[in-house]
Each structure stands twice: as C-alpha cells, then as structure tokens.
Image 1 (cartoon, rainbow, N blue to C red):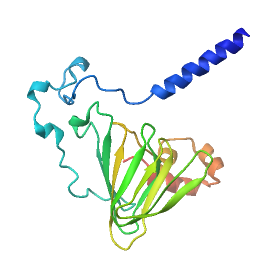
Image 2: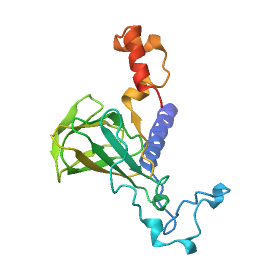
Image 3: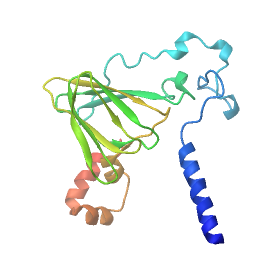
Length: 212
C-alpha cells in the first residue's frame, strides 16, 4: 500500500513538473537583454534607458545566405533580438530556392506555427506513432507543428518560397535529424548496423553532415 502511495505521489509530481516545464512568466514589463552584463544578476538593461528601437528588429527584411539544401533561415530570438528576452516567443524567416528543402528537424522547447508568405511548400510532421501529417500549403495558409515533433518543408512550386514561423519560446532549440545522427560523432559500428550502411556510404554521409 505504501509503495502504491509513493508511486502515485511521484506520478502526480512528474505530471505537474511537465505541465510547468515551459518559459517562465515575466515578473516585469520587459527585460531587454543586457548583452554586456558583467554578472548574471545584471542581465536586464536598465528600463529607464529603453527606447522604441529595443523593440524593433529589421534583420529579416530580405533572405539570408542559402545553404546546400536551398534553404536560408534567419532566426529571431533573444540572442539576436534582445527585446524578446523573457517574453516567451521567437520567430524565423525561411526562404526556399526552387526545390529547396528544410530537412527533418524538431524544436524540443516549442510549438511552431508557419505562415506561407510566398510559394507552394510541401510541409508536414510525424507523430510518435510514426504517422505522417503532410500536404502542400500555399500562400496565405498556415500549419502548426506540435512541440517536439519531427517536421520538414520543401518548395514544390516553380518560384522561390518564403515561410514565416513563430514559436512559443524565446529559445525553441533546433536539432536537424541528419546532422544529429551523422555529424555528432556516434560510433560507426552503431550507425552501420542501425541503417544498414557500409563503411564507404557512412563515410560519405558523415562528411556531408559534419559540423562546419
């Protein structure tokens, strides 16, 4: 009986912890990151010196540099936009060349909602039962990717595409599946057995997804 009570208490505690495991609510109007703070206790810029410019970000007026998959992604989080600090949200602009791909990836700390600004994008996610939810979304449509779910996008139109994504965390995190698997240093023997690869094939993948 005592063991059952202990287990029940543990489950209640764990459930409560998971429910509360999100960005904390702010306790002040705003806390603009003080990038030059000398100590952790001085991490907020003095509010009396704040200006409207602290709450405006102009870094996504145009696309950034495109990578080998035809994707350009500019993250707007508290590291690049200090005014977002403690507000529990962040943003991304993703541009796709024709045929461009945002490889399967996930955000461990946030749900994402993506708005198609231009183009036609094959977009979707996979749940924990390995069921896929995917379709082509076009200009003016939105799609949501639940927190922690692997998701992906590909420009299937004949013109460039742009997506604007919003997150319910100031630091959603990002893990790209190919890089996490083949670029993280997992032992070759494990990867060869897990994916049925020979050493030559594995070497090629590791070279392609090695950290820059």
